[in-house]
Length: 394
Image 1 (cartoon, rainbow, N blue to C red):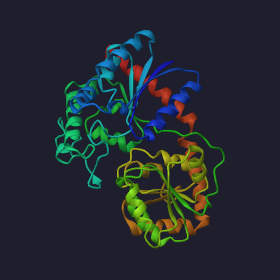
Image 2: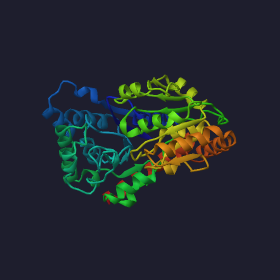
Image 3: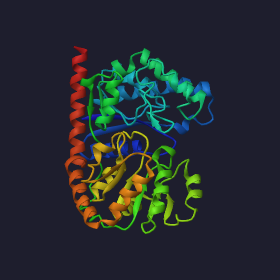
Image 4: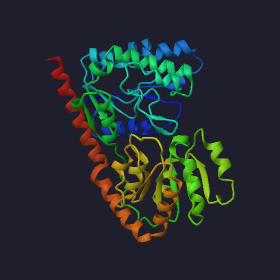
């Protein structure tokens, strides 16, 4: 099968990039012909606001390059990951007009939320999800915390909703969780063309025993990740080190916080090499995912479960689908310091509980999140998209 995969890298690396790269590698390893069509938001540096807005809405240069690529190398299917802001939604029309089935992975909530997170002031927000023009996002500065940037994103989304880009030019949407699918259906996306397909992660081999003596967080250091409540909760756990692996806009504030008395067992490592991250996670007693935002998935969750590490996560977004409360980990209310501390203490003290959870976590990974299952579901999605595309032409 000839597969064209499109992705727009953000300026800061994240889970979307990891999923894109892992799926391409998986397809190539299976013998498929794969061509990457990628752009990076760093290309926008130094350009004026109007130029960036025009490009984000309809990037003419990208359109021309994509058309030439399709003529030279006729793909059987196109799989789009992210188009904002350099690729632009114009790629959907090019692909559709060329008669190529189009699959879109819903890494976030961008199509129904200009801020992409369904979060405002630390709480769930879907004010814009059913609106043709998402004007509340401008009022609340939901994109990059700027009125101008928010207005630009609202304009792009409104124009493509008017053009019916999402309805007519994308054949199949892949939601990584049922939570994401429910949000899309509530916003009016077609039920028959939006399916749940979880991400996968490589199999590291036999899982751990869950008896590590420290906890670990892996990800961006951002307000919505619930890291301040996490550190506050760790004041009452002086015997259990906590490592925060990652970087982001909240790092400076967190660095100041952990210098306070009673927090010398909390350490921020910054980003580490992939092998070192895997080693740290694999040796941990638990992974902590204290998000207050409605996560669309939890890549670090399945990476931990693959290594037989229990997960302590917030009861928000897709996380309750991934962490079986009391079986593969524990769930707590987002932002609740006392509940987070109590659950963490319970897990760290009770070695027998963690050992059982470690075994179940590994079993849960094997049942749902292996590369083999990921590959089968991906090929199934391509076949379904092709069928839908053929029916729409008929």
